[in-house]
Length: 118
Image (cartoon, rainbow, N blue to C red):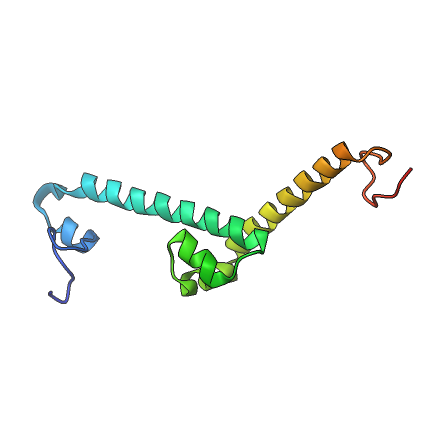
């Protein structure tokens, strides 16, 4: 492997090797590959946010289930955008549970946040 990185046809092609091709022949393929990786990572982040918000699995179990390493999950948890997504998921869980409780519990006002019997 050279200092500039691997070339096309090796296990880990990336932009430096692709841009060296005449006419950018592999640019379309690279774009699709990057898009797939980005979409996969977005799905992993969303799944991890759901598990972190649920707060019923350890970080090791979440990472294994999502398909990332524990350190990656720790990095994501320190990012403000991931923390905001976890908070949004928790709020949605809370709203859903509250709505289901209110629908099943006669004698409680729908808009009562203190949940005291009327």
